[in-house]
Image 1 (spheres, rainbow, N blue to C red):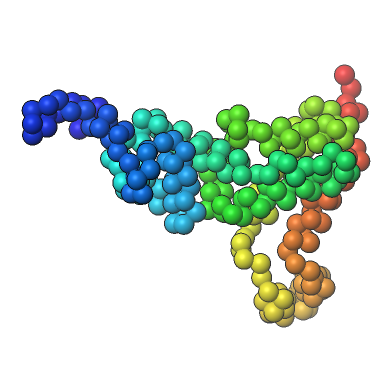
Image 2 (image 1 turned 90 degrees about the vertical axis):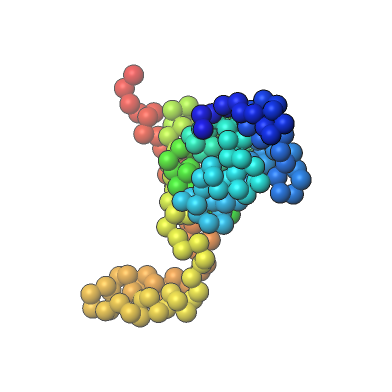
Length: 238
């Protein structure tokens, strides 16, 4: 059926399926709104993965004709952008404290981003493919660039630094597993390696007793110190 095609009901009244669908409510009796559509889509991705998301599945979850969704979300690209926005909006922007050192502020921003990505790990492919484009989604980006600018980086340096830090966080989340391995599992991994072939790796595994959180902090701090210590742009000739 063409989008918005009018039909006649049994009573003979002209009926537009899209207009009628907009008046429907979801299975819990809530009016259909953009925010509800996006939160439901994100819940599907969180629960069942990105492949499970479709307009048909979304309509079924909401208890409406899938065509009703298009009144609020015009296409799949817009839905992806809306999911990215919903994820980015969960980042706690109030956690940044300008009184802290630049390194601590960068680490705090990275942790806040990581926490949200871990909570929506199945949505990571969407963020990798689409990225933030809406004003709401760009607010955390503005905060991190502001932290780097406060630390003395030039605008171009701050932008490059933001991209590096964001990529590092996404990489840490994407490496998985999202469940932190136990000490026994780590021991099993390095004991399984032939010590004569992988002496350095076995040594590293054997001495790594801290949680993954410590490894994440170590990496972000190292990146932050590198960004704060020097500039790849500053010494270029004008």
